[in-house]
Amino acid sequence: MLSNGMIVEAKGLVKTFAGREVIRNCSIHLPQGKIYGFLGPNGAGKTTVMKMLTGLLKPTAGTAKVLGMDILTQRDQVLSRIGSLIEVPVFFEHLSAQKNLDLHLAYMNMEERDASQVLEMVGLSHTGQQPVSTFSLGMRQRLAIARAIVHKPQLLILDEPINGLDPLAIREMRVLFKSLVNDHGMSILISSHIISELEYIADIIGIILNGTVVCEETMTDIQAQFENGLEEYFFKVTNGGTESA
Ligand SMILES: Nc1ncnc2c1ncn2[C@@H]1O[C@H](COP(=O)(O)OP(=O)(O)OP(=O)(O)O)[C@@H](O)[C@H]1O
Ligand SMILES: [Mg+2]
View 1 (cartoon, rainbow, N blue to C red):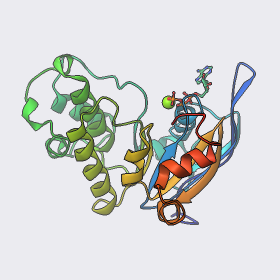
View 2 (cartoon, rainbow, N blue to C red; view 1 turned 120 degrees about the vertical axis):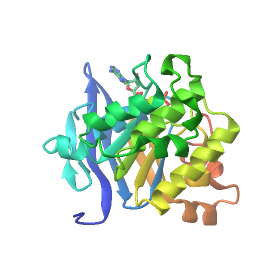
View 3 (tube, rainbow, N blue to C red; view 1 turned 30 degrees about the vertical axis):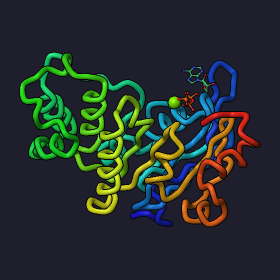
C-alpha cells in the first residue's frame, strides 16, 4: 500500500493565518513502524502541522500523504485509520470512560470492538460508572489516549500526550506506546516539550523551528554523534540553546 514505506510524507507544507506564514516549506517523513519525536520551541508550529496531518486544518500549500493517501482528497479513509490526541480532549462529561469509548467506536462504525481491554491498558479499568466530570487531569489524559487507540488505528498522532501525567503514568505510557508499535504494528508521531521523554521512545527526531522542519535524524545517529544525546543535539540545532524546547 505504501509506495516507499512512509506512513506520513508531507512535502512543502505552508500554512498562513491572516497573511502571516506560520508554517513554511515544511516536510516530514515517518517510516512505517517507527516512533517520530516532533520537537520544537513554543510556537514553532507543531500543533498546526499535526492539525494539517489529521485534516483539522487545510494547508495553504504543499501536500500531505498519510498512510499513502492524500489527506485532502481521501480524508475520510485516512481518518478511520488514524488516532489522534490534539489539544484539550472533549468528552461526554456525564458518562463513564467505558461509555465514552463505546460512543467513539459507534461513531467509527466499530461497535464490535471491546473498549474494556483498552481501559485496562491505560489504567482506567477501576473507574466503572464514574462520570468523566469527576476525573483528574491525568485520568482525562489517559482516557484521551485510550480513545486515540481504541479503534486500533495504523497511525497515532499525539500532541504532547504526557501533559498532566505523573512520573509513574509517564513511564506507563512510554511502555504502552512502545508496545503499540512493537506488538500492534502502529506508527506514532508524538510531540513533546520534554527532551528526555522523546529520547526514551523516539526512533527518529524531527526538529521544527519557525514553521520548518530543519532536520530529521535517527536517535541512533544522534546518540552516536553526541555524547549528551538529544539535548546536546537539540541545542546545537537551535543555535546554542537560546530557545527552549
Ligand atoms: N488559528 C490560528 N490563528 C492565528 N495564528 C495561529 C493559529 N494557530 C496557530 N497560530 C500561530 O501559529 C504559530 C504556531 O503555533 P502552534 O500552536 O502550531 O505551535 P506549537 O509548536 O504547537 O507551540 P507549543 O509548543 O506552544 O504548543 C504560532 O505563532 C501561533 O500563534
Ligand atoms: Mg502545540
